[in-house]
Image (cartoon, rainbow, N blue to C red; front, side, top):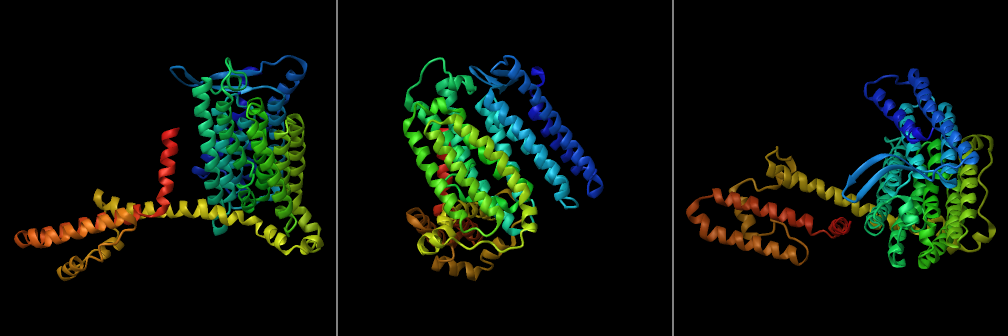
Length: 516
């Protein structure tokens, strides 16, 4: 059985790939193909579940090796990444629970999504997500955990915008995707530092190193992983994304944000606690952030008027308490809290649609004590304005940057490569000699840059146009004039794009790339 341990995460992924092939070639689609779709995914998850049950029995009746290496993924010099799996109490309990909850959720979704347009697409993503969560909990090294981490993020994005024709769903999926990239930076930095200071990324190398490293070095690795865990588990100040994730179908809300994925950050902190114990400052930080998150989730949940929002804010509060428990050193208690909460929250989310039909009464009014504190009530209603702050700092600049890159491609790259010119750019260029001479004399239609560099480029373009008009064009005709006008226009357009403040994000990302 140990020789086939790699099948546990691979089977759900293979089912997702098979469903993707069916969709690509339009096989077993629509209502007629629902039974085949469900049978493929349920069979894969059932096999994974029974394999895990067998491993659990072996764990209880005999001695299992702590780590199983199924093969080598990458090797270069002293650096090696294995397909390794860890088999201790933490990983086996969580993996078994993941397989069981995924099975229940998939079976629940059969009737819930019957005759939905994207039925096959939903089950395909569920297979990929199941593989991702099994990897996160069973992977024997940080790189394999990161693969599951990213696959879970992609699956989350695809199911949040499941109803992609709704503008709100697409926007929320974009917000969440951008927010989670912050945590990815911390994870990648932690992987790089583990290679440098521990010589590898296996859990044995990190948690039980052959030689001790300074506490400061351990703190840097833990800080990167803590950032990743804070984002994935929706801790303050990254909490707003989890409420926006409810745009997807209820089964995805149950398994992603109520039960499994939101607990991945908690599991990661429990796993690296031997390393965290060397960085007392981070433990204090976890306690503070956990308390703030619990307060945020509790207070925001008091003003919610629908059951799913109430449950998601309750989940946020519980996750905050788990981080407090880890910060206090109660890792076993936090793990028991994690297991029980994930099971209970999955049941609540799956039961929510039926509950909304069974309960005809209006939502309860806000507590009287909260009504007596209008400022506190406003803070809870606005969710402490974290949504607006996140949009201002992350989402809007990223969207604007994307638009700038699109404009740069349309106005500069396409022209330089010789592709057909966009109509808007052609119309923007001077169309006759009279307008060209007017532009040269006024210098205003060439574009005015912002900042020191922008003004410098504008002045340079203006002086060059004067030089061209007085000393070159008198003897060379109007052909060079047209050439210089176009060159000045291109330089000005580049300056207009690069002079915008949001390009600071590009410099920040470039800096991270150099560091990594």
